[in-house]
Image (cartoon, rainbow, N blue to C red):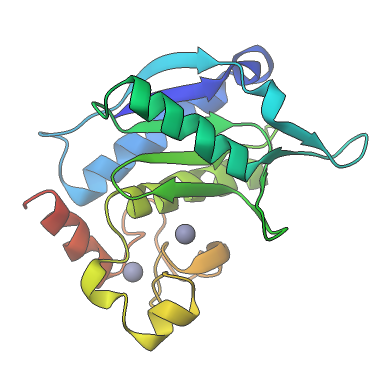
Length: 194
Ligand SMILES: [Zn+2]
Ligand SMILES: [Zn+2]
């Protein structure tokens, strides 16, 4: 996996890049696949043209345009790598929802890390990375998609799990050592053939 980052992060708060790498590393450790997959910092990118100004202080990025941006990168690299992009600001989606991250199965992930070096931002960024990594590697698994609760939650996991929507479960789980429920963890291991 290759990590790419909004170049403004390196100027303003470069440790966020190190933390994102640490979160991805931790994901591979939790799943038990550090022997077959790893992550490296690949590139800094200029994505400022995808900013949307909501007012003077609050900026968001266009979620839809970022998806297009990542799909073009994927086409250019001939689908050789899964890329994870970290950006500063939240993403505004076409349904007017604001999200901290998004991902496509087997394709790419995006997480926003916030501008300030606060504990809250650090926690949200970490959870966004782990959650989107779960989506990239197939969560919730195909055989769960017809379950009513999974559908109601917009293809998310109804258990005490980091794949529950909106960080709602974070007080109930061990986010560092055991953020996935047993079902999701076993589906992740299956994806990697473990
Ligand atoms: Zn999700
Ligand atoms: Zn789960």
